[in-house]
Length: 119
Image (tube, rainbow, N blue to C red):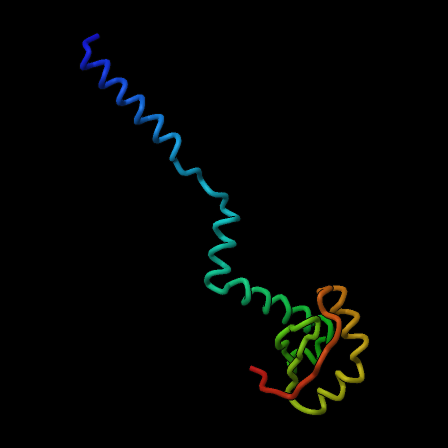
């Protein structure tokens, strides 16, 4: 082997070592997706969809189309209802609805009903 060939070989070996040292490893797909979802706000949309399903299940089919969940703050879930008669009915059933919701989402400790727009 010539001295030039050995120096080229040595340079190639050093380059390979440097690449191995600084190479990026593949990130788990779950980590990449969770970052993407949090950046784009998809996690919040997904959580709201899950909360809507839970509220619908807790209030029953007859009242499900007349209410939607609002924000969840410090364990208190706001539920917007279409009109005052639905508000009164849900107020009567508050303990039962809260019990069902607490089984599904343990963060919920209380409910607050408000008349608001339902889309």
